[in-house]
Image 1 (cartoon, protein in one colour):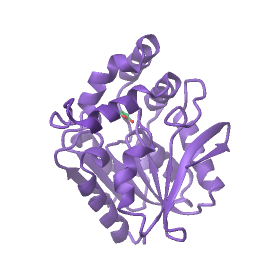
Image 2 (cartoon, rainbow, N blue to C red):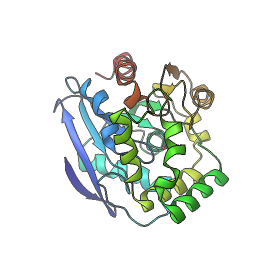
Image 3 (spheres, rainbow, N blue to C red):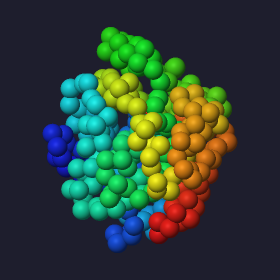
Image 4 (cartoon, rainbow, N blue to C red):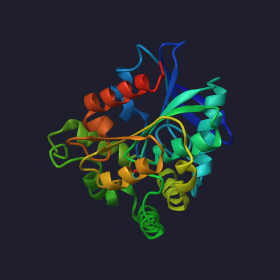
Length: 264
Ligand SMILES: O=C(O)CC1=CCC(=O)O1
């Protein structure tokens, strides 16, 4: 693992895999850090140079004061990739990470050659919804919303106290900084990539858990329908975070799409 100061923030990141391989970048969701990708990344490191990072306010990255703009997150990722000397990449993004990936693809078409959009959309939620979350997390902390968030993240079968992984991912959520969480809710509230995503011409795969309670299959399907030639895949028995709940199938879908898109 490593830390880098880019723009006005210190970002925690890690580079794994084949040093001279094509680059695959992973961007994670609200309230998670880059460990959610561990199992998927393990299936790719023999072929790819993989870049993982924690967006500002998440994981071990610095938490600058809320609110954030989606452009802050997009600029952070662009600056981190410039810092690492990456000049072309496939970008895999989950939820807000998928919005960051869409933003980067439209801002830096030189950099983004393939997109995998997991459980995300061109626009997620409403201003009322995000303002209510910002108010709740600011007044009562993230743990106060923990159960409701877990119901969207994971299926009932996964969400049992005997499942140590479930307990661990709950801790990952509740240890996110309030600035990072509320700041990123503001970024989500204000972001709408409908027009820029409609203009994408690169290979795009959209995948979603069949029981995703945050970005349900119909929403993700509507994002795929915006993009000429985009592929849509449903992951069975998964909620909002298929890379954690169904890592084998998620790895298979991502790995084969990267190959088919010529990213090898
Ligand atoms: O908390 C949720 O509902 C899940 C989520 C929405 C945007 C994101 O990145 O995660």
